Amino acid sequence: MSDRKLVIAAAQLGPIQKAEGRDVAVGRMLRLMEKAHQRGVQVVVFPELALTTFFPRWYEEDIANAAHWYETSMPSNATAPLFEAAKKYGIGFHLGYAEKTPDGHHFNTAIYVHPSGETVLKYRKVHLPGHRDFDPIRKVQHLEKRYFEVGDLGFPVIRAPLGDTEANIGMMICNDRRWPEAWRVMGLQQVELVMLGYNTPSLNMDNRGFEAHHLRVEHSHLSIRAGAYQNACFAVATAKAGTEDGHELFGHSIIVNPQGEIMAQATSWQDELITVEADLGMCALGRSTIFNFAAHRRPEAYGSITGQIGSTPPPAWRPG
Ligand code: CDV
Image (cartoon, rainbow, N blue to C red):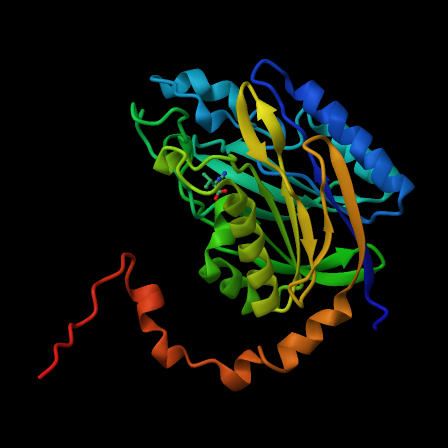
């Protein structure tokens, strides 16, 4: 036990329909912030692309017709109430949104905002799943490669005041959680709390839906638990859940400790707040023993991790 305690929450959002405006989503998020305040929460994590429906499922021939999905400023008139609530309640919050920069770049972005309203850290999604062009074989499109550029900020970690303590915080977005490289880059910066939002369909549309249903959630949890354990950090993984215009997202938000244990899990497909008291001192055990990187890592054997992208077949062995 240490005195570095932090009350954190995953603020899962139920579905947001295509026709619903940001005011609907922000109104629901404000109610979750109020609930978080009532429960003594100090940091709230909202999902990926929290302000709108998961729009990369909708194809636009002319990308200009997708302009309304992006935020050109943060805060904006629509999102200012979140910043005001953060100040009123003294709660820091993580928000995922579609970003359009002043010079016209598009990113799938997340920020962590201090209760003062200042943005502490920004992250832009690196691992963009899906495809660029309309795919007639798929029942549902996943056009993140059409609507976003690969994030250009790496996986930054920063030490910042959180609640009554300080913590090393980092972020990843949805598909990033499946890539051990993303976790390790943050582990190497001594991350203590990873905040991540996701929108994951219940069916694997890459494979025409042919993936065992129960394994979809299992793979998500497996990735997050392994990442947290192997890098001795807490992870708050917050979903958008439920059926958006007929398309199901699986929810199952979780908060995981540095032992890889699930401390809390959402059980609905609606707006739902799950909270834990995290003892950040727990990060020291893994970091100073089995995952003492300085003592045990062997980067001279890991060259292919950064030296190549696709896999290559190994040399073949034949008897005699
Ligand atoms: N939003 C995502 O990144 N979703 C992916 C799906 C498409 C597999 C995910 O990894 O959950």
